Length: 214
Image (tube, rainbow, N blue to C red; front, side, top):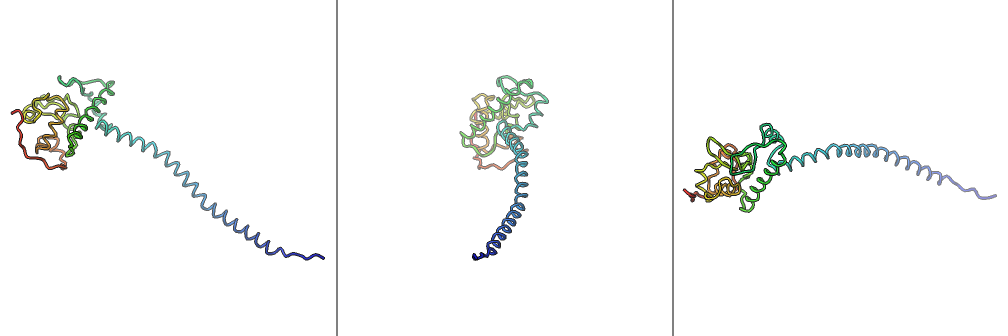
C-alpha cells in the first residue's frame, strides 16, 4: 500500500495566496476609484483651463503689443479712430474698417518708444504709459486750445527748451528723445499726466543745465 501524502500545508499555502490576492484586489479597487476620479477631474480641468489660459495669454500679448486693453479699444472705436499718419497735418479720423491699419500704426509707435528707451538705456519710467495718457499714443495729436503737439504733447515754448528744438516737433522719435532728456533733467513733472499718475522714478534726475534754442 502506497504512502499517503499530506496536502494540508499546500492547501493552506494556496488558501493564503487566495486571501492575499483578494486583499490586494480590494486595496487596488479602493485606490483605483479615486485615481480614476482624479484622472477624469484633471482632464476636465485641462479642458476648462486650457482655453482660459490661452485667452489670458492673448490678452496680455495684445495689451503689451498695442498698449491697449480691449475695453479701451472699444471706447476708442465708439468715437472713431484717430489716424496715426500724416504727421504734418492735423489728425483726422478713420473708419472702423481701417482698424488693422490703426493697430499696426499704433504698434509701430509703441515699438519706436520702447526701442528708443532701450537704445538710450532709459529705465526711469515707462514712457509708453505717458504717451498713452498724453496723446493715446498718437503722434498726430494736437490740442487746439493749448497748442500741445504730437506724441508727448509738447507746447512749442517747451519744445524750444530741449536739445531737440531744431528737429521736427511732430517727429515721434525726436519727441521720445526729448522726453528722455526731460526726465533725466528733473523736468518730468511738467507733464500733467505724470503729476496725476505719479510713480517713483528709478533714477536720480540730473540738475537742469540746458536751455535749448531759447
